Image (tube, rainbow, N blue to C red; front, side, top):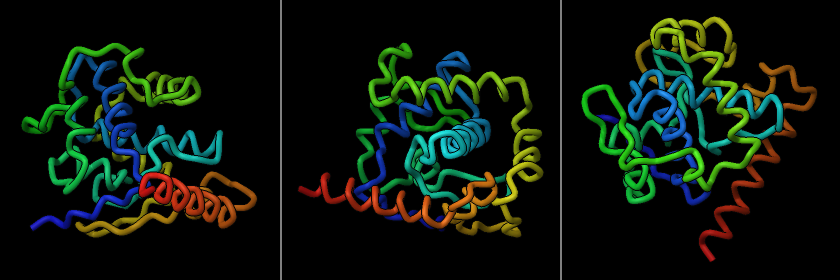
Length: 191
């Protein structure tokens, strides 16, 4: 049985669905799940490098094929226990190894994404779109030092580890700031 994490209130499911939709749109309406997981992680990582915060506000794990956005991956696999409607508005249930758009969309329909988010997503797409998904997974093993071999399982990747790998001067403080923001989002959503 697969472990399915509880989805915290601070996780923005609709935004993660829109990021996945962005890459599916760029791929012609569908995208392989492995390719999608790599692109999402690399976009969040680039956002952390440039803006000190990820786009999806996910948590991250090392898996055999590289780093993965944990909660988003639960939705991709159809295993997330809550807020399925936020996901299914944009992404259809997985068919084999492919994720497909749930409806005809344009980039302008992705209203959760800021111009800054879209710029980072575009850059990520342009840089990695022509790399085979397995080669991209290997690339993350070599160029994302926060990834550790989980030996067939998964292990958490701490936010501070990502910031440290990005050579930020204050990785622990940045990670703590993100955790504080998450608590604020959760309190706001609970109210």
